[in-house]
Length: 431
Image (cartoon, rainbow, N blue to C red):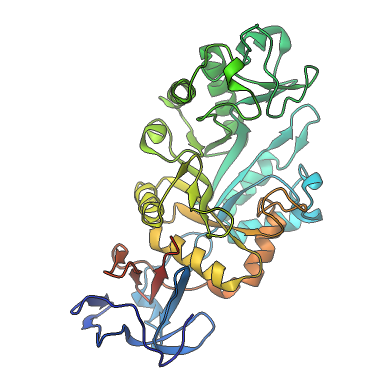
């Protein structure tokens, strides 16, 4: 909540120095936090002080905007916009948001929309190889790259599921995950023994070698920068009673198999490889993160969470700074309550606190009903939802803060603050 002439209960250390372009000034601290100068909220209100409850944030711009010539102009497609946009999509597209609509080809109109709004895009180019359902064609990716020379495209593939006819039962059956009795495992995407989907053994070296060649060839065909690998089974194979599996006895076995798989496909790779696990040992052979749960507003779970491991608010910011400072792609998916602008400002502020370069992009994931998978809720995985949220929150997403002036800092009360060339971002964590 932001109110003019309302004193803060947020106390910053006396003498905290704020730096703006062309000068230094000291924040006045009189028991409450006073802004260094009158500023403007996203809604256009002028404020001298702010009050933030836990879970609230504020994105403010200076009342006297600095000349554009003083700002570092972003070179991506959305010139001067501080928030960079991108995402991974697999469903819905032009025709709706029902889960059954997934697998549709991106429309020409949406391709044009992506070309002027999105810097990083990941699609499963062949959603179903057996039916040759193509979401996008190589010439369309080429068009996007010509429109935005810094545009990055990533093919999406499943790491543990192969589908016939890409999967050849005559030559690849020994690469599948097996029960102790030698039978092929039934689990995620393989519902029965006659399914064309096959769960692959990530510890099988022949499969890893095939997979590396497969994703490299596919990336070259699609003018892609690399590949996003979904479903690497760090904590065990989903939907499978792991106690019955051959050669696997513990989480350590699954983690080792996953690391060995990434090492084999990532070493000396000619393409970027991105996956969901963000921790250091998982990232040593790869080049970025698809942050499917990069940030969740604290309502859906009792914690904030990045895939496979819980993280504190501070750790989420630091991880984003770390990845983006190396210019590694980070698709930062933010989950928040649908039609809740306070939630949206909070997740966007968290993104801005951790944005170290334009390699980290924001993907809105509005949640409704009971969360992902319920009532047809795609939680932002379709481009139509992304476009709707952009139109709804355009004044937030198009904010021109310029580049950050240094890293974010946390004051003694636990409030995060970051100064930008043309404004400031505040966030009071809710965890």
